[in-house]
Length: 150
Image 1 (cartoon, rainbow, N blue to C red):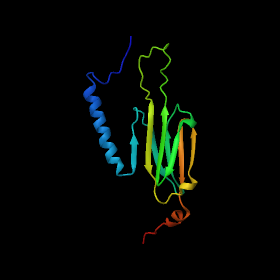
Image 2: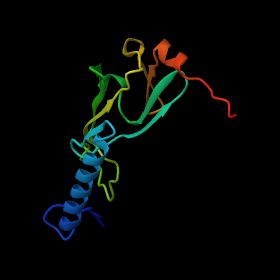
Image 3: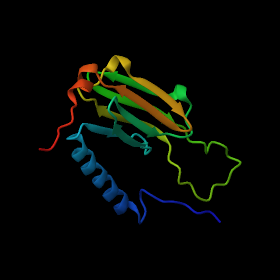
Image 4: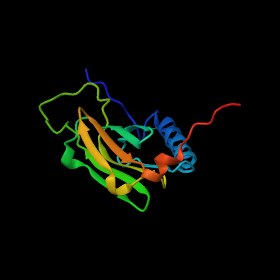
C-alpha cells in the first residue's frame, strides 16, 4: 500500500497555493523586523533568537547536515546562513509510504543590531543545532543601567 502526499495538479492544489500566499504575507511582515527567509526547495530551518547581557544569540535547528555544508556570512550588518539538506530517498530499494521530512536548499538572513561586535562572532554546530553567538560591543554593555523607582 503506497501512501502519497500529492501536491500540484491534484485536489490539494488550492491549499498549496493558499499556503504559499500565507508564507509570502508572513515573509513581508517579518521583513519589517529585519528577518528575511528564502524557502529554496521547501526546507526552512526553525530559529530561536535571544539576547543576553553580553550577546545576541541565534540557534538554528538543522539536523542531518554536516557542519561543512553551511555557508555563514556576516557582513554589512546582515547575518546569512545558507546550506542544503540532502534528500536521502536516493536509495531505490526503499519503498517509502510516508515522507514528512523536508529537504532542499535554504537561506535565512537576519539584520544584526549596531551594538554587536561582528569581528568576535562565533559559530558552533552540535546535536543538530547551529549556535551563533554575536558578542555585544563593550560600550553597549556599559550603557545598560538599572533605575531605582522613587
